Image 1 (cartoon, rainbow, N blue to C red):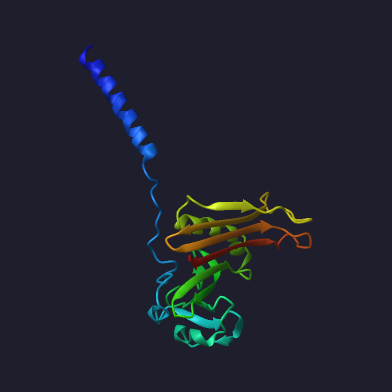
Image 2: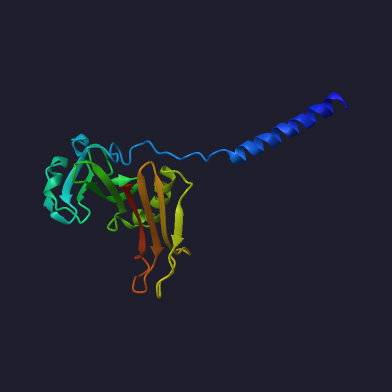
Length: 214
């Protein structure tokens, strides 16, 4: 057997062993180590939240109950889970376009556990945004899923309601879940027109929920 043929057979054997090793190697655990929104990270103490860059603090259960800042989180009523929900926005001095997440006008809610730690974050596209921005609301869900890794999502598609119609040829009722690095993620996207809505009015939204996983 000549040298070139022996080399070729050896290369095939090596590749075969590499394939077997990869097939039996443990799957790599996906991790996420960044912040969840700006400088906000699940698990941090409420006392560590930045004193500047945020405005319009209020209790989510009663938006008329305004707060001076993060430090007053305990003034909001506790939910059944024991968490307190605080609405907030971005200070225009640090966000020229207002409260925007990945280019989408958003409604933001922070959840603080009874022990004073950040236990959750909710991001919703703003239904009162101008039409040219609101009509892209369903795309925020794609960006959110990409931020936490494109793989590993479990998604389900909802059935159309009676008389519901697609918008621009697209009908979407999607709910995706994933658990990563102590976070339970839910991303919901909707795009459709209800029977009573006119041509310029339709459901186009994303809701992102990030909670500490037990």
